[in-house]
Image (cartoon, rainbow over all chains, first blue to last red; front, side, top):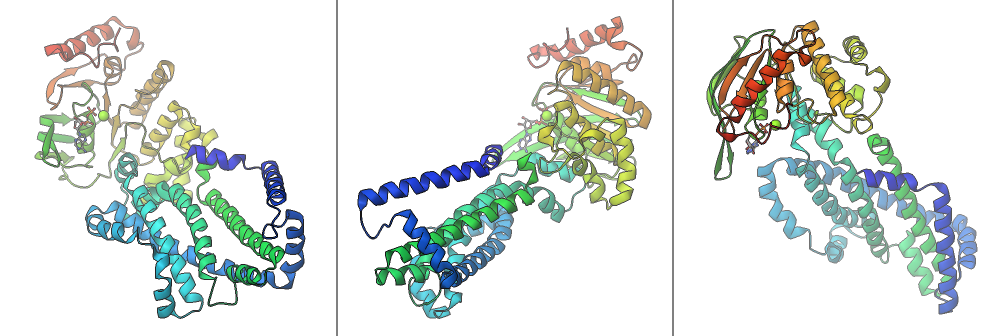
Length: 254
Length: 258
Ligand SMILES: Nc1ncnc2c1ncn2[C@@H]1O[C@H](COP(=O)(O)OP(=O)(O)O)[C@@H](O)[C@H]1O
Ligand SMILES: [Mg+2]
């Protein structure tokens, strides 16, 4: 917990600037070595990004943001309470664990056609697919975190007369929060990958669609502007998660 | 105040049965202080949990001032080994936790807590988290949390064992002072002979696991001025040690008393 906190601390503005600089440098070098139109140099791609973002890319950006954020929210809303509960109730866990272990490794992304058929091709099917996948990631992590809450903390509040709900509220939830945040960070990466895949067909909105569409037109700088937008989406959501963790876990940052 | 009648406790670990305590008979008198001493693993913590109503005995009965056995009693406060503070709560929140569970919040809680913080010299660090405190400060927060409940019976599990010598002596003085001032019945578990003799009017000596009461030694000099440097103090330490060492059970305590 403390190493995580410290590493978040060190992510100051200067180190971000350095990181951006080195990434751009690496990109530039790679683009020159490969010398392929599919990997444009950073400057033309950035210029293209700034040019087309206000012209319509922003709309794809917003649609994708909406899909990812809503999926993350739904995934957390279902997985965290259930994970906390089965992590603390041995009987429920003994019954549910085999189900979870059988379902977890199924590549749910392969269910995409089924989901499209059931939920039609609108937003619902995409959001359902992303939610389904990250649900299991967050569920398993949360359950394991809830299992290893120190018994001493629970005895401590029990001795003060805590009720069942007060034990959850004052011990189990805060004890699991740092690991839940880690799970959400990992799920964010997964969510964006799944989003990209789910947006690659049967839609005309979203960054996944935009990237595939520009690719088919062989407009590589535009395509790269789309990739940049998708990366920025991930970056902003990462910052948002960090911010929320600071807000909800202040004890990690002292 | 508290009576233990033929109390035994056996933990069940799957197929294994671990007998932790056997045939414990004790009569705790209101307002007195007791030290419980014994080798580690002999069941001292279990004994405190039983007294606090956190676990139930497998045999025998425990009565608290007339009331039957049951839930953690409102008159009892327990300070756990390693302090039992929650790392995600500030000093203030930790200390106010017991009151919160009794629906005492806001100004009412402040009125109770501020004098206690004052007394325990904690007012400077109310907004800090446990990770920002020294061992002695953590122990005082645990004390504050217990005292806020205005307990008649205070149970402490090895409260000072993780502290350096000077802090330990200061806190021993503090515990003595609080015990006198608040007229609490005190039961303190320790594996230090000196501490038992310094803080216990009655010293309950347990045998190695399964813990049985080997002796209850009266310690009339306890609390007298300069007791720590008195000849009687050292005699009492030797007496306790020789009882503990019967059957060669000395590893855990021999280094403690000079
Ligand atoms: N929850 C438990 N389940 C099984 N055995 C336990 C449990 N708690 C304690 N014990 C065992 O009971 C014995 C007494 O433990 P404890 O009361 O903690 O001793 P002490 O505080 O004197 O060191 C030890 O041998 C310990 O391993
Ligand atoms: Mg113990």
